[in-house]
Length: 121
Image 1 (tube, helix red, strand yellow):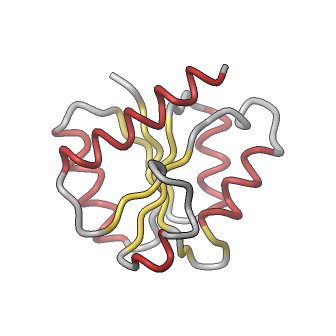
Image 2: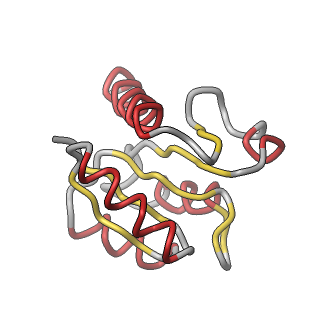
């Protein structure tokens, strides 16, 4: 199964996502903030990053830009989540999901991001 790195600063939501994704068959790593996300990604194999658009201290888009500047992390695709449609409008189509969402929809978006990254390489 593919591996997702969940970057979410809300502890309860992070735990819920982790449990739901594991039940859906995903391997899951978690990080509460950007620095931890980079550390996890550097020592593990990550197929896709699922991040909130708004993180404490740094946006999800800024985190993606940091990944792009790090050798070995640049090709990892990102999927962004937010409860605000307005914030999601700034994210390219197919790379975002609005909270709340169904696990099946999340699975579809994550797999599509992985497939698109593979097609680009």
